[in-house]
Length: 275
Image (cartoon, rainbow, N blue to C red):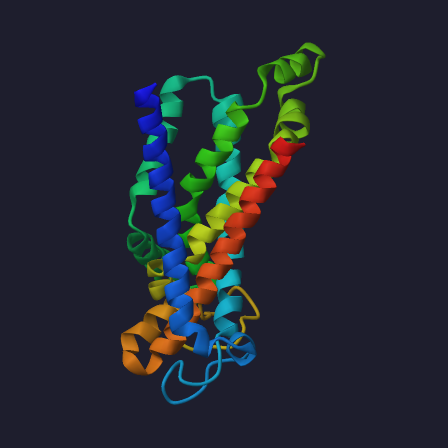
């Protein structure tokens, strides 16, 4: 009993410490950047001789959404397909181990290396230029193992009685996967995609080489470069004191977007269990 109580106290203390640190960071950054956050800051383009001194971050917000959504599409489709293959189709443990090894290697690659690879292969060799598509391809590779692991876990938690009943009724494996298994874990898949998008939204290194720029308008196509919140924040901090207020405001907006997205993913995932 004493060991169980100590473990529970240790768990609560750790949870409280993490929660306290997160709240402190939000309050600190908001207090530093509150003077810069207003409608003009959220809805206008940056202006002025010094980046961040005038105007706002609207193009950076829209650029981040473009980078993130494209990366989720490019990385989410193969991630879900890989999870389905491992759980329902692959029958050889040796081949499954090879796939897992490849995914683990991809997950361990630094994001700046993925950005350099995307620059060398897509921007330079294929000559598509610095654009949203090139950056999103690098981000897609980065988040694919993240999404695959969560989708595979949810597929393995499907009650086996449900799948066995489908096969016993004469349903094919394809019908069982697309009409029973995937709809059953639809909420978990969407949550994994949202969390993968949050992971991609906060990544700066892949954007430096491939499609992120210091100043541009709202992107119209995927074949043009764009601003992004993490890269804009990096440039503001690099400028030093004159832009620190805008940097804190940008950081708070990005943290708020990621926090809201994580909260939506958590709520959407638990909604299935509540039902």
